[in-house]
Image (cartoon, rainbow, N blue to C red):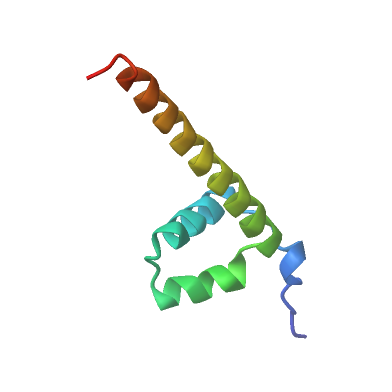
Amino acid sequence: MSTNPPPAHRRPVAWGATVKAVLWSFLGLRRRRDFEQDVQRLNPIAVMATGVVLALLFVVGLMLIVHWVVASSAGGF
């Protein structure tokens, strides 16, 4: 009897591994072996959702930093 792995969208969500994989992807530093393991074990829907959330957090963080820098330098030179 052979056991077929569940379809990609039915895999359990491992949030820690998903966040780790997405953060490494943002940096562009991921070993081929680790990438292939991620493809086999991570839920692609969770990877996409995590990527969108982390990208939004990154953009909002940059906006807050720029706002803070501009507000603190408005005092003049």
